[in-house]
Length: 313
Image (cartoon, rainbow, N blue to C red; front, side, top):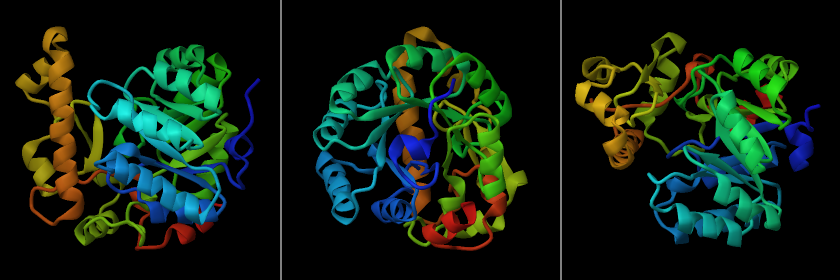
């Protein structure tokens, strides 16, 4: 039998998580989501130093005592992992969302402090692993997710997980309307993680050109690229993306598939790709790469986090 829904787990009003988005999430967005009865998370990597990370957490805590989380990259490609985890443990954030790696250490250290750990998963095999490690929930990243995405459609992924694990499942990808939340909950989700429709919110500090692109382009303009970080990333198919192509070239493919060099080069590729995405988020330029998922279809104008949430509930 499946555990409670996300609102019961975190004692909030609605089972909605404003997804942690690389470079986009900020404290204003998190606070607005918490004050609207939802929860939210931001990536630890949005802050360059631990002092900045601490400051962000403290800033949110000063305004509200409602629960929020931090997304942590737990594999070797994140050289800041250990120090970031220490900060999150010391400040006792409410939950940590782990991505791209083995969450064992994070789970083991969080348990005694009562910090919940939700693990990003894209398939059943990995979901079973994190369940065995003692995760509190899984974030089921489907093929409609913006940024790094999975391969399975929401319904198929939820069905597989629901039939084979007992953890609560937070569905991530493709959510832009209240009816879609009801639908995935009917398929067995305990809650939803929503990102793309918040990219162009008034609280986000990304370049106006990125916000304009969110309004101008639709779901048919979203493509998957393996060129940037080595993992499949959904981006807007701008003229520049069309020019560079979306398939990894032979060298990139070899780097990703050679066990001997994979460990080291994956780290370099990931950071190189992230650097590109970082440059694009905050300045206009021909060579921009903008992340977004198919839910971009619902972005018609710049609105506040509160307005967007009002629609979702």
